[in-house]
Image 1 (cartoon, rainbow, N blue to C red):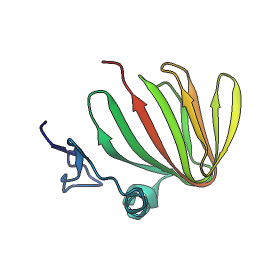
Image 2 (image 1 turned 180 degrees about the vertical axis):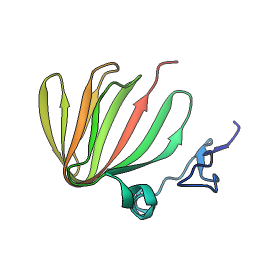
Image 3 (image 1 turned 90 degrees about the horizontal axis):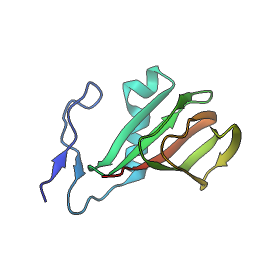
Length: 131
């Protein structure tokens, strides 16, 4: 298996973070600190870091400031949203679900959904794609 690193971006110009290998060690606490120290977090309502990415699976750490939103959208795969910090409202199927630390919601692909932070929040999004 060929190892892959993230591509460089304005937020992360070094582009040397391992995102795919036969084994990837992911320290979520370290990534949360990084997420909250970057310009995108300091100057906008949210920030995100892809911590793992293959052709069939993605793990993305997402932080939202209080009142921050991910507007309604759909995912191209089955998702899970695991709230690590804070309190959010997850909306899908015309239903609001309050999430607090430790809650997980799953959703099949193609279902419109949104997330609104009631307080500063961080969650791990997992997207499982069909091959």
